[in-house]
Length: 300
Image 1 (cartoon, rainbow, N blue to C red):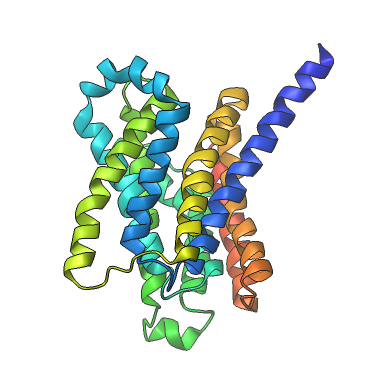
Image 2 (tube, rainbow, N blue to C red):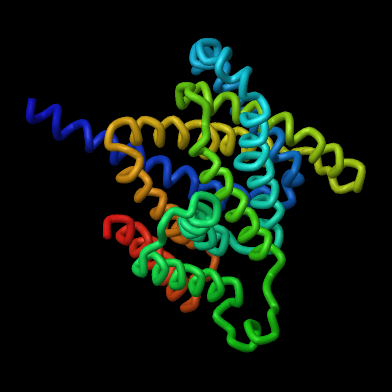
C-alpha cells in the first residue's frame, strides 16, 4: 500500500515534467523550422498529425462524448482556433525573428495573463502578493523583450517576434480562462474536439500564406519537424499533463508549467548554441519569482 502511494505521485511528477520538456521543445522546433517549412503550413500539418493521433489512440473518447461536443461546437471550434491554431501560428511566425530562449522565457507570462484575465472577466480577487508577482513577471518580460537595454526600452524598440509572442501568450491565457465554461466531456474527448477545430482553423491561414506567396513546402528536415511537433508538444505533452492532473490535481500540476521557460532556455543553449546573456538570466529569475509569488498568493 505504501509503495503504491509513493509510486502514484512519482508517476505524476514524471508525466508532468515530460509535458514541460515537450512544450519547451516546441521553442526549439520552431527555430529549427525556419527555412525548412513556412510557419502557417507547419501549424496546419502539426494539427493534422495530432488529429490523426487522436483518431488512432483516443477515438473512443470522441465517440463517447460526441453528443455533448455537438451541442457546443461553436465553443469547441473557438477554443481550438484560439488556444491551438492561432497561438501556434503567432509562435512559429515569432520564431523567425527572435530566439528560442526568448520564446521560452516569454511563455512564462501566460500564468500572469491568466490571473489578470480571471480578474477582468470573473472579478476573481487578486491579492497583494499576486499583484507583486504580476509586476515581477511583467518586468521580466520587458527585460527580455528589450534585450536588457534601457536605451531600447526608452525608445520602445522591441523585436517583432517578441511582441508576437506576448500577443500569443495573451491569447492562450484567454483560452485558459474560457476553459472554466468547458462542456461536461472527458478531457481527451474535449482535446480531440479542440484539435479538430485547430486543424480547420489552420486551413484558411495556409491559404492566406499561399496567396501572399510565402508558402514553403517542407524539406526533408521540415517533414521531420512536423512529425516531432505533432507527436511531442501536440499529443504526448497533453496526454501526460492530463494524467498528471488526474493524479495530483490541477493546482499542483499547474506548477510544473513553470519549468517550460527553464527547460527552453537550457535546450536552446544546448541544442541551438544560442548565447545565454546576463539579461536572459535576470529575466528568467524575475519571471519564475513572479509566477511563484502569484501561485503562493492564491493560498493567502
